[in-house]
Image 1 (spheres, rainbow over the protein chains, first blue to last red):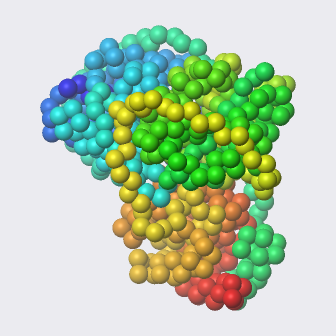
Image 2 (image 1 turned 180 degrees about the horizontal axis):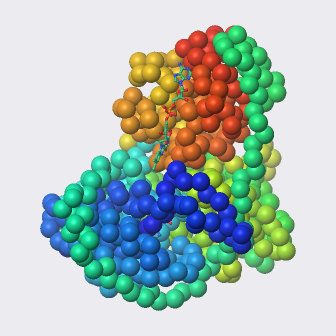
Length: 248
Length: 321
Ligand SMILES: Cc1cc2nc3c(=O)[nH]c(=O)nc-3n(C[C@H](O)[C@H](O)[C@H](O)COP(=O)(O)OP(=O)(O)OC[C@H]3O[C@@H](n4cnc5c(N)ncnc54)[C@H](O)[C@@H]3O)c2cc1C
Ligand SMILES: Nc1ncnc2c1ncn2[C@@H]1O[C@H](COP(=O)(O)O)[C@@H](O)[C@H]1O
C-alpha cells in the first residue's frame, strides 16, 4: 500500500501577522514557519498505518523552497520519501488540490492523509477537493481511523457529537486533533532525514478562480468596560447584560 | 437570469438554524443581483421545509430517499451535483457547518466553481460578490472575489442574521433520488450526552485554568444551566483532562460566535481568541488586570472567580425567578 500525506508549511500560530505593503499578502519578515499542526496528526496516522499494515509513505508539499523544512520534519518523524511541488505563485485551494491530486495519482497512493485545516488561510477544504478530483472516498475531520483490509471505519466530529462512518479504499482522510499523539522525531530520524533527497517537481499550472482583493486587520474592538474589581460588581454586570446588551 | 441556490441542512429531519441564516442572506443577494433563488435540502422526512419561505426563498427542492436521512458525503454530493448541473445553478450558498464545510468543496469540483468558505460578510459591488473571511486564526481578514462564472460560498454560522421570519410558505418540490451512492456511509451518530454543543449555542460559559481543577466546574455548569448556555473550555483544561475535547473553544477546538461568551479564568491566548473573538458580547472574569482577554471583552470584572461566579449565579437566579 502506498500512503501519501499532504503537508503545508505555515506561520507558527503564536506569531504576529502583519499585512504587507501590497495589502494582499502578509509580511513574511520575522515570521517563524512550522509544519501545519494538523498535518502532524496526518503524518502520525500515516506512520501508524504503515507500522501496522506495511507499505510505503510519501509526504507531498506544494510551495516554495522553504517548504522543504516541513518535508524534512516529516522525514525525521519517519516518512519514507518527500516530494516538493515547487511553486511560488499564489494558488487558490482548487489549484493547489489539482496539483496535489496529480502527484498522488503519479505516486499511485490509495490512502491519503491531510490535515483538517491549514492554519494560514484556514480553508479546510483541500482534502475534500482532492478526493473529488481523484474520485476517492473521503472522511473529513476524523478523530479515529481504522483500516481493516479494504474497509475503513472512522469517527468524524460534528456539532454535538460524532458520525461513525464506513467506507473503503481508495480514500482521503483529513485529521482533527485527537486522532493520535504525534511522535517526536528521534535524533536518529533527524540525522537520517538530513541525508535524504527531497525530490523536486514542477506542478502543472492551473488558473485560480479566487482572487484576493485585500487583506486587512479586523476592526479593533472598542475597549470594554471594567465593571468592577470584586464580586460587588456582579449586580451591575447582570444589569448591563440585561438592559444595555439585552443578551440575558 | 442568474440562478442562485441555497443548501438547507437537516439533521434528524429538523432544519438547522445556520441554513436559515444562509437562506436569508442568499435571498437578499439574489434581490440585489436581480437573480432567481431557490433552496435545496437532502434527506428523508424533513419537518416544515416550507418554513424557508419565511426567509425570502419561495421554492425549495427536497431530494428524497429513505437512505438519505443521515449525512453521506458520497450520496449527498451525487444528489446535489446531479441537481445543480440539471438546474443550471450558478451561485450556491452553504452554511459553514460540519456538513456544509464537507460538502461545499465537493460540490465546487462537480460544478467547476470557485470556492470561498467561512465567509463573515458578503457585499455586492458592481454586480460582483466580495466575500470577507477570517485568516490566520482571525488575526487578519481577507476580501476575495470569485472570478469563475460558477461560485460556491459557505457562510459562517451565527454571523449573518436570519431575522424574524415572515409567514410566507415556500413551495416544496419533492424529487426522489434513485439508488444513492453510499460508498461513504454514516452507520451511527454518537450524541454527546444531553448537552448543548458550543458550536450551536447562543450563550457559552467557558472555564480556563483559573478554575483550578475539574471539581470546580460544577459552578460553571450551574451558571450555564440557568442561562440556557453551553459549557466551553480552554485548551489548557482540556489537555489537563478536566473537560472533554468537544468543549474546547479555539484554533484546535471549535470556532464559535454566540451572542454572549463568558470567559472565566481564561487568559485569552491568541489561539483561544481565534475561536471566539466574533462573539457578539464577551464577558471576562480574571484576577489579572493585564490578561489579554480584557482587550476583547465588552464587560470585565477584575476579580477572583471563586467570589464572582457564585454571586453571578445568585444574581441570575434573581432575574430568572
Ligand atoms: C498550535 C496551538 C493550538 C492551540 N489551540 C488552542 C485552542 O484551540 N484553544 C485554547 O483555548 N488554547 C489553544 N492553545 C493554547 C493557548 O496558547 C493557551 O495555552 C491556552 O488557551 C491557555 O488556557 P487558559 O487561558 O485556560 O490558561 P492560562 O493561560 O493559564 O490562564 C489562566 C487564567 O486564569 C486566571 N486566574 C487564575 N486563577 C484565577 C482566579 N481565582 N480568579 C480569576 N482568574 C484567575 C489567570 O490570571 C490567567 O489569566 C493552542 C496553542 C497552540 C500552540
Ligand atoms: N500547499 C500545500 N501543500 C501540501 N498540502 C497542502 C497544501 N495546502 C493544503 N494542504 C493540505 O490540505 C490540508 C487542509 O488545508 P486547507 O484546505 O488549506 O485548510 C492541510 O492540512 C494539508 O494537509
